[in-house]
Length: 224
Image (tube, rainbow, N blue to C red; front, side, top):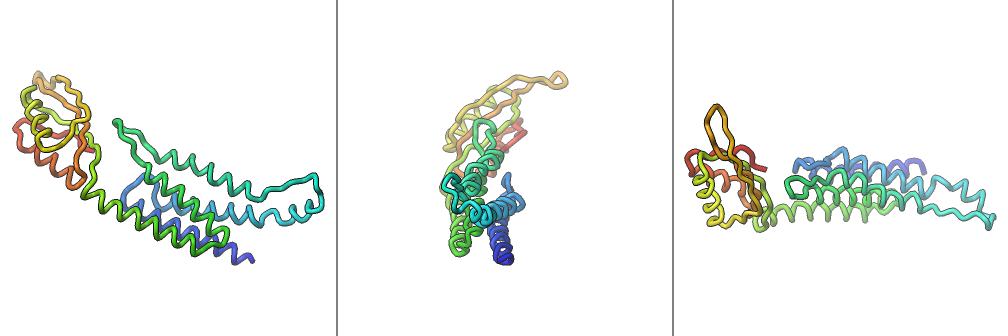
């Protein structure tokens, strides 16, 4: 029986690690180690929930005044994993990042629980579907979807800024918001502009950089 328990947590750790490797490859907030530990811990708690209180259950089996629920530990895994998932979500520059990674951590916990209960094939199938979903969606969204990006650049004059903004609009890039400030360095005045854009995902960074390079006196300071 001991080796069966070890097998359950080992398979859970491997399957969770597989999802973590994909997140690690995409340089996300939670990678291999996080998913590995979440899946392993969930499987361990599932095994503990099922078999860790066998002697206690037998001891109080004939006592009608004592009610024991062995599923409580497993139930707390579902709610408790939300704290880890929340830690991967970042709100930055009016854009939310990390939701997919948080969902990955949550499903890694579910896969660990499935392994802990001995449902290996269900856990393997779920892992395959998760990896297919992540990579397939990344493939299609990278070509057909859109996303928000933040651009900060400097320009010599307000007229240069207006030219850049007009060119961005003509290229089909939607300006969500922008902020323009006049600054000075060493007696030289220039305009600093921060823009939130919605653009097509496919090669969006290269398109913006190529566009900025067409203007004299315009320098990109930040692009995220």
